[in-house]
Image (cartoon, rainbow, N blue to C red; front, side, top):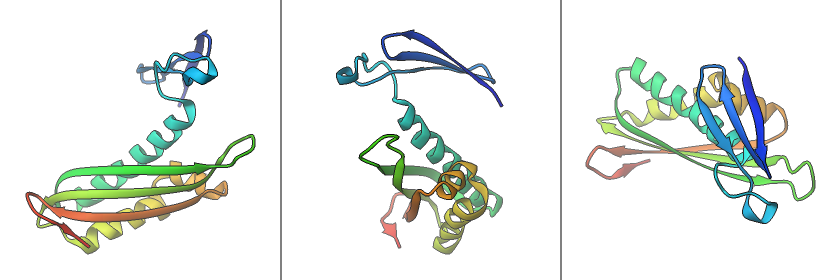
Length: 145
């Protein structure tokens, strides 16, 4: 795996992934940025949520669950002093579909957290307290659990 990051001026950078995708990273205006892209630490959260979401959907599809949507909302707290690492991350999944088995959704979230999501496992081993929660929504219906 590889990426190239090139400084574009001020606090803006262009990142190109090994698979050829380009993304602009930028700082907040109060840090000299133009808010032209996400902050690097936001990308860490986005990547972690994407990694875990991929696992949850993949596991449920393998179990032949009829998943319509999976939305992960991730909140994080950071240390007050540099290096301002993440100290706590909470990942909340809302999974909707037809006749979803709540126990299977819970197990998929747990498997991602404990075994498959390399991003969240790496952060957890680095000392970040990572919490997971979920809810199941019947497609066109109310939340379960």
